[in-house]
Image (cartoon, rainbow, N blue to C red; front, side):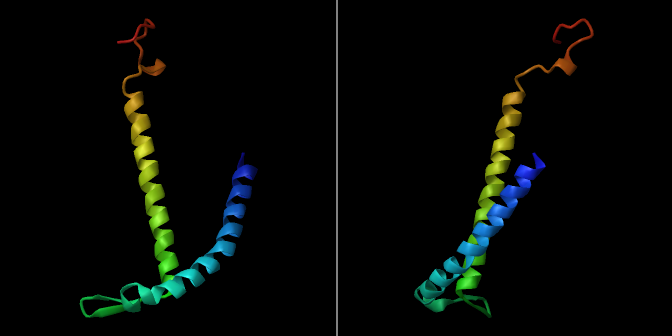
Length: 96
């Protein structure tokens, strides 16, 4: 099972190394059209480059995946709350 996981990780790295520069290039050509190519946060001005936008996009994907995993685990825990587990049964074998 670990070799399958290792292969999947390597495949994802290959895809990210292939698609990452393409996405950065596309976003770099799109960046001047987004808010004039800069964002001002107080006295700090952030230049929007394709690399920065692609990293922000990757961060959004990671945040979405984390939220999805959290919701999934909470749903599983909620479903399990109504089920009596074997280790919670009384010594006589009957659920409490």
